[in-house]
Length: 367
Image 1: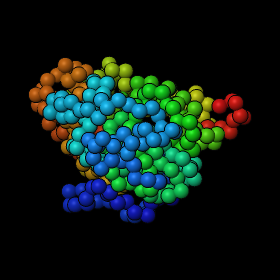
Image 2: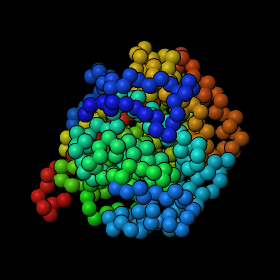
Image 3: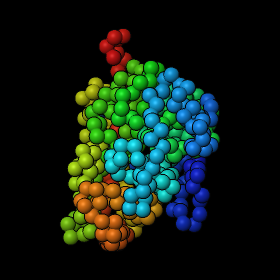
């Protein structure tokens, strides 16, 4: 799959504060990627209107999953941030304007990491029916729909934070993907990104993907893995950043939604029966000072832009709910973690995995 010809920031505006974009159309050198075997605008302009459910595809699409109660649109404040009131306490990330902005920054972060590619699964460019599971702000689904106009793209999320104007071949639905999937028409390609800690049962998610894919269809999962990695020992237990990484991982495990789950995605796909399973490995350096290659320096700058300023939102729920800290304790703790993230002598990184696989061509009745 070739690199994209351009990398617009969409709702983001390029400014001097944004890290520079990689050259348009730049392709990835082989040694930067470790590979193992293996139609209608449908989002309401105002979510508070009485037409919201219909506009979001929640009542007029027989292929969509079952509608959720109006409580899914309710939010509650916790430690200065807004979170879902639906299944309160289950989701560790806020659902407010600040988090939406971070998600759009993160999208560009991924594009830069992947040399402007939206995805890797071989069947993605020819897929006619596509599901973006956990679409967030919908930015990936919108970009995919624009790049592949022959595909019908469905973005599904529990948070109604998607824009009102979308390509004619893209629609959004509000639903809880941990509940039963009731689509009656299968997909050719199912994509998810950064859903660690969103699913308590990844085996059930993998099975749902299998059950809702056509034969020869593809699934792709993109996630980061905790704890932070370091190849030279420069990140030690004495560093706040090391402790922070371990504390978030421990808290996520208490809730049964481990931030380390992505390391098992490859085996889960194989166990389910997927073939042609491939895992690709990337790094997100904590800053752009210590990497030695131009590409990784750029990615490190984007890591800093994506995560450093968003550390509070990423940490607050896990540290308060999981470890009993107060909001004030979290706010007093994070500056030291930020300092370590910016330290060029600490060569730490997030491990990012891309895993994809294909459902085999099964005889009728065997799916």
